[in-house]
Amino acid sequence: MRVISGTARGRPLKAVPGSGTRPTTDKVKEAVFSMIGPYFDGGRALDLFAGTGALGIEALSRGMDQAVFIDLEKKSIDVIRDNLQSAGLAEQAEVYRNEAIRGLKALAKRDIRFDLVLLDPPYKMKRLDDLVRMISDLELLEPQATVLIECDTSHVYEARIGDLFQTRHTVYGDTAIYVYRYESQIPEQDLHTKKE
Image (cartoon, rainbow, N blue to C red; front, side, top):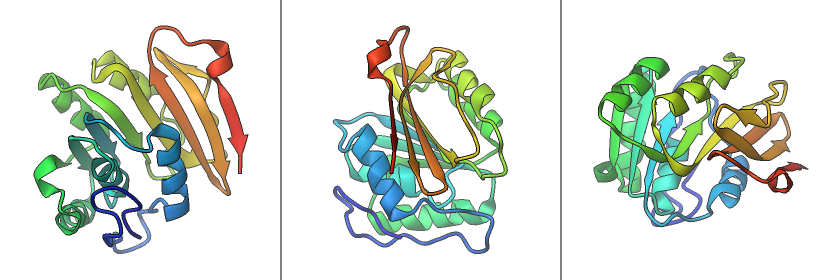
């Protein structure tokens, strides 16, 4: 596992010990960022259920100014910190051990808003609809923010979740990627579905 592109390109990333964390493969990660980037002109990212931190680190490497990483597991937090150091991006990151909903509420109290939210929860989590609505309701999103969900293909998400509108849905093997944009209106022709 490595950083695919940007300032930290090629830097190796550690995996979380054990089988509880399912890292995003390099192929899927590259596909994800080709959809939502591939590069960024600043901004702030949130990597919730961060695991190894690979998605948030990739976002930083590709131009995000700052990123917040949240995970409940201590071993994940340790790996995220190590990976940020390895990538030379620790100064641009905040890392918190917390449960997802509590973490979001804590961020809302700080009046922080994000341009990019990355949601790659354990596959045992069946639905993220309510969590996505909460992110919007807590006013954690900048206008035109992107929210990405990575999940098992058995999970199907609607074209609209609250004030977020689906712009892409792509399948890679047993992994599904949903991309949403935060705005009040979106033309129907902007919706795309693609299988690979």
